[in-house]
Image (cartoon, rainbow, N blue to C red; front, side, top):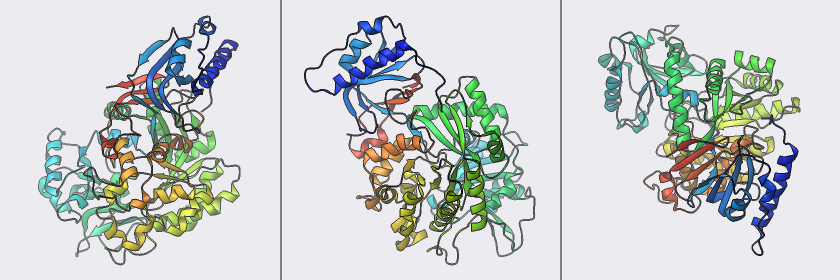
Length: 576
């Protein structure tokens, strides 16, 4: 993101004064107040946020006990320092006293499906249903408002939360909804549950002994589909689902972005979107209705990638939309046993999960992305998939030395301990979601067995190895609230404080490292660290005001922290 403005001589002069303010603020004794008369002739509108405990997350790890931020009219941080001298320098500024509250850089979710969140608002929400009966009850309630001709769509079911932890069946849906297609995505997005009318819309007969590449059709003892389709098998139903109306998606997107800013997210990396979604974001920008920064990732090796290869990275002048990354897939998810493992599942002998493609194909896809000067971001959950992707990066990177790098593995949930050091060696960013660990910990040991837990959700091991981390949530798979992810990374406990010492407690991280992974390091993962991610003079004024000090409160209180204000580009986009 390049700045489109130039500083004139008068602004240069005031920046010298601001630098002096910082020097004065750093001294413990004999402080001198800068001369405010220098600024009186400048007549520049400035907003001054004062009386705050500011954690800058700059390289100096600065903490300003009673600090202030001066923000220009175009949203740049003009100065940051102690409140007292800043109040003198900016005597005519529009002042906002935050009453001693805590200020952090705006949080960035490095893997959140913003478009998917909007879509989820148009479907039945099954997240948190504690039984199949509860899921069906929610579906009946949602169906009551649907026109007769529409599909019943939903997302969020998780059989691991039910008394009988087995996949449901199409017969369950046929009995309740015999007259309309029903298609429901599992919470991780890597399994679908459909009724007979939905399965009949597939572009191929789903019965028999065949299986699609990179997918799996669950069948009964008569070789007929049970209604559960895994990963690539879902494509055969997805292609038949009618599109949601543009008007509904447009309204749902406003709900989604407002939810983000209300929870302190000023940026999101949206993995796997096509040009139609990019057009929606551009429309919102033109309407001044996109209050967050979106780092969009193209959806695989297809027409969107070719468009980027032909035209170069997309960098909207507003600073609210960048696309220079491509999302690829190596495997499925652990909860549906689609994550590709080096050895068979401990609780499903003979099943090693699903690699979406062979090594040659993955190598070719990564190379294609790198050849266009773009960043590759590959979904890999199992230790087999992570090794496959690391091997692909090791093969491809020497052939594209002019590519700017910063390639990523999305999730990196299960890693063979021998592969952890390779992230640092290859310069690969681990884009991880801490809350997945505390969601999966109840059954992950059964899936993996004890020996593979050594590399499970191993963000502390990666951090100690020198690898760069970028944290997120994978919403709407998980809750949007980043405080839950911060809490999970710090404690490795659920909200009830279980287990007492944390699950695999050696992988806990300190708060500073965790928040940096949600701020400056997440910005780095999107090539934006010179613009956002920390609070420093010359950067964009993206920050949040919290109701308590996240660095000081007991860890158990972190999920209870509330965002009082959210600012993007020096404008308040949320106030509680």
